[in-house]
Length: 420
Image (cartoon, rainbow, N blue to C red; front, top):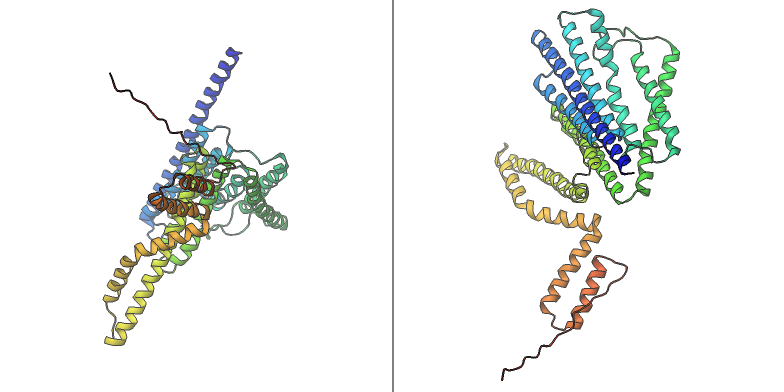
C-alpha cells in the first residue's frame, strides 16, 4: 500500500512538471509572435505614416493583455493542471499572439514590404476572425467551468456541447463571410463563400452562442447557491472582476467624449481585471480579502464620482460668476474648486463609508456600534453581574452564536501563617 502511494505521488509530480513546462512554453510561444507582429507593424509605420497604428502605445497594451492572460493561465495550469481554465487562458494568449503576428505581416506587406501575396492575404484573413475566439471562449466556458474546471453537474453537458458547436459555427461564419475584410477593406476575403447557407448557419450560430453565454451565467448563479464557503468566495472574485469590466466600459463611454484613445486604454486595462481576479480566486491568494476590496471599491468609487461632479460643477459655477462680474473667465474658478475638493475629501469619505457600511455591511456595522457602546459601558460599570450580562449580550449580538455561556474563575483565598 505504501509503495503504491509512493508511485502515485511520483506520477503526480511528473505530470505536474510536464504541465508546468507546457504552460510556460505556451507563454513563450505567445510572446514571440506578438513581438514579431509589433516589429512588422512598426516597420510598416515607418514607410506608411498614415497607417492606423499608434506604435509604442498599441504595443504596450497588446503586450500587457497577452501577458496577463498567458501568465495567469500558466500559474493556474502549473498549480492545478487538471483545471481547464488555466489552459483556456493560455490558449487565449496564444491566439492573441498569432493574431498580432498575422495582422503585422499583412500590414507590412500591404504597405509595400516584401513577401508572398497569398501568405499576406491568408494572414489578413486569419486576423479578421481569430479575435472572435478571444471573446466567445472566455465568456462561455470560463463561466461554465469556474472555479474547479468542471461543470456544475452532468446536466450541464448539453449546454457545454451547444456552446462548443456554437463557437465553431460562429468562428466559421466569420471566416467564410464573403466581401471585404474588416481591417483590410481593399482585400476581398480569399476564402469567402457567397452562399445563403453560410448566412443562415452564421445566424443560427450567433443565436446559439448568445444563449450559451446566458446559460453559462445562470450556471454560475446555480453553482453559487450550492457552493461551500471557499467556492462562494471564489465566485465573488469572478463577479468582482466582471463588475470591474462592466464599470470600466461605462466609464470609458464618458471618457470618449474627451479622448477616444484614453477611452480605449481604460477598456483595455479594465479587461485585464477578469483574468487577474480569476487567477486570484483559483490559486486562493488572499481569497478572503474580497469583502474588504469590494468595500473599498464602493467607497472610493462613489467618493471619486462625487468629487468629480463637485469639481466640474464648481468650475462651471465659478466661471459663470466671474463672467457675470468681470465679463471673462478666471483661473480662480479652478483654484476655488480644488480647495473645495481638498476640504471636502475627509468629511465626505467618512459619510460615504458610513453609508456603505449601513447599506451593504449592516451586520458588521451593527457589530461595530455594539462594541463601541459596550466599551463605553465597560469604563463605567462596577457591578460584576451586570458586566457579565453585558458581555453575553454583546457576544450574542455581534457573533450570533447558537449558544453563549460565560465561565468566571471562582475567587481563591490564600491563608498565610505568620512564622513563629
